Image 1: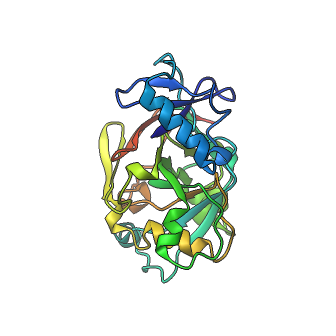
Image 2: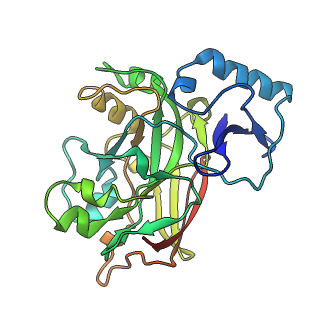
Length: 284
């Protein structure tokens, strides 16, 4: 299924994109697309039954699409998780996953405005596969157990301010948690529709120019290992999100002068089977 949330910011209603591309209202069945729903197999089964029966009412196709997940618990991110990205930045291949966090309040819809922070000179783009957790997981003993906890997948745009992240001391979080720095969606695609998360192409364009063109097969730590590894250090709950890293092609990896984002720039990104995003960047 392709689950999403549509409507004005803060007033989105749960919805589904059916196989004909029609937006269908789920508000008579569930209150939101969130961790509680993803952990409720009977509720998900009811949605599937109603979709198959063709009884779900249609929604206006022009509605704004918000983030596909409400009430996000935590966002855990993996740094330097593609071989080609580590190479372009001159970084050694990590022996273990590099972790940092993003606050849930950085999340916006897939076509919402993204703000270039005040004082920023090095705002950068990063297309990423987001993993959404659907059941509580701690100390997973295997990759198979880890994948069983995955409810689905989405596109995340891990917008970053490199000077804040790298040049200002402390941890990376300063350059990762500016407002609007995590567009998510358009859909949460359930795991049954993504049989192999290591076989997905990722692409990103800036002002129409292709900048990133990678594949999740190049991940240093694949999805199953990332989820298993994280569960050794923290409990993963339904509604948690994991951003699994970005392939080569970010502004940081370009020769000088690096083409960092400026107000007025337009970024578009897509992942096979997970939809497409488009953001216009403006000044904060």
